[in-house]
Length: 534
Ligand SMILES: Nc1ncnc2c1ncn2[C@@H]1O[C@H](COP(=O)(O)OP(=O)(O)OP(=O)(O)O)[C@@H](O)[C@H]1O
Ligand SMILES: O=P(O)(O)OC[C@H]1O[C@](O)(CO)[C@@H](O)[C@@H]1O
Ligand SMILES: [Mg+2]
Image (cartoon, rainbow, N blue to C red; front, side):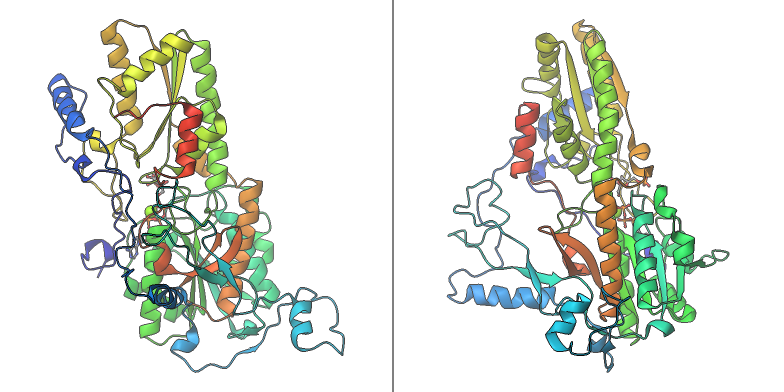
């Protein structure tokens, strides 16, 4: 059954972003641009701009804090949740020594064995862990504590996750392995860097049979999309360009068909690069492989320009996107600064997470107003955005706005349309704000020269910057180490600056969003100087 038509298929559903009042979700459908529609819009805006509820209670409602053993129980549960699925859970396979070594070119000294040999080769111990949370909040009222600490006393609990890297024992014979790579979802800077590093690392283990699956999951079932043979030589230069060497796609796919294809192609390791949707697919593929008792490792590499994957410091491509977005902001700034009553408006990607807009605003320092999906705002009336713009024009002669794609959706027309993957197709927040501003300044008789820049696809199509290229390198290498170590249904990420493996369900249980109570959002507000707009 095709995923798109299967209501029971594991569908990634975006929960409401934190900090948003439920009364914000208004489903009246109308265009805000005609006069009657404008009245309707104003009515909705009034309803939508109710004060945001501030909660200070601990979010851990599932824990019984009156139980004296609650901490031990939580940790036990945590260890089970974060245990990495392994092919030996379903198959009786004996490991063998890894051929991977840091000093491959040198002969191992005769007297080297045991721990000394592990050090020589550069292996990570299977019991190594990295700490996920490192702040001890003294009070639940402390900034950012709400989502982080436990119970009425705001306790800190150790939350360990598995360290990534090469293991001394492997579960596949490299010469017999067929490894495949697939890139799904939208583009993201760094896809080619990850593909390249996966190929390089497989090559170092001694894998010769490496293929690329073209155009996302589609490549598994669409006729005419043949596998692309990959080698060190083929991928040598692919990181010099943006995009995906293998092609990407959204939508389609049927888990059973994909696994049939994996079986038919005799794939032993599948590296799946993609975002939340892709990882939901990867988890379903992993589960189906288990059900069929296949010796296959399904390893994810989180790719999302929006940075919307849980638990990770950041995902690759995000840093590049922010850097690229700055070019648009700078241009808008120059336009706004040079015009009489200039207003620069830049729309950036972020369907449900405002990280790109927040970081670009913080980084540029030129933004007066940053609007993100997680923080509701009012456009008209007292304390509204337009009133603030009037003030900025009056006080400093120009204004700069950065808006995320998903911001203020509750004020816009809802289409209920979805893309091929089932993601909602949003109304254009940038055009909406652009028209509201133009109309307002015309109405009040104040000249305003608005310049609107939407650099969406320019930001996404470029090649990875230096820091993303390093992140891609590490994630790609670790993905291969994870597969040889026998794990499956895991993804490779960076938490607290350390590289780790995480079970897929833990990172896709919800999209990661900007916490309006976080210090980072507070810093953004400090930098822009914007009021609440409520
Ligand atoms: N719940 C799901 N179960 C199985 N497959 C899914 C699921 N959601 C999405 N997919 C598949 O994963 C692929 C990519 O999904 P999607 O277009 O949502 O991109 P994504 O991985 O979330 O990346 P991006 O960050 O670009 O949105 C598509 O081929 C889609 O059919
Ligand atoms: O035009 P496309 O390919 O659907 O991609 C746009 C989407 O990609 C994302 O950046 C990541 O999912 C979203 O924020 C955005 O809506
Ligand atoms: Mg997605």
